[in-house]
Length: 262
Image 1 (cartoon, rainbow, N blue to C red):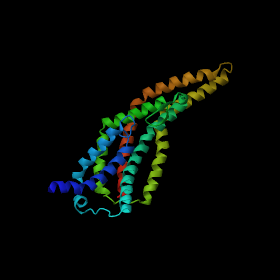
Image 2: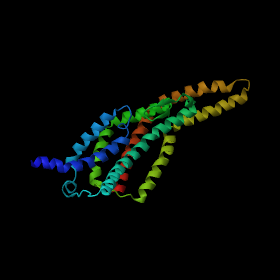
Image 3: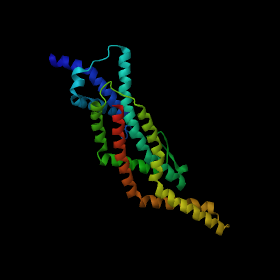
Image 4: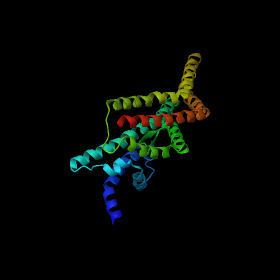
């Protein structure tokens, strides 16, 4: 009978943990993909919340006072959702860097018109972007970063306890800086392709001056495409190394953001 009353007493706390877990998984790379069925996501969130419950600090499980009003519960739920969404947004912005790099490369290669609708991002996506995003997703799995996400979720309750969200003004500044990273690091990731294609464009322009009777417009597209694909294949190893660095930066930024909320 005592076990039954213990389960009843812990059930509201389980719902609170489930809310933060669901919010984080809902926007986290890999977990948020539309190819993963919603039932699987819900089951995973429920299972993780059940696993996280025994790891909560004792002051939460023993001394936490539940709100006694509807407004108090609404504020508590909003705080828990905000914690998960903010951390997931940091990861999502870093995950957008390979996508931006692929778009920059495809634009210079003339592949912008070959963009196809991607149900994962719900937007048109070029083939080079798909390659970079796939590499990012595979490296997350290979480096066990998806397991690190779960470990981070456990640490959030030790750094930002339930109902303990602190929206520091420096948090907004950090989010703005991360948004600027998408463009800056995207250009850096695509720099070899952009540089070579710029030289190719200049060379084609010089050829058009030297031989104006040649239809440079018709031959420039296959030339730029061939050179772009060649450079992409030759630099794919270094691109993977840069994406690994992005994953490390993502972990660092998520931890810094977590401490700003604590």
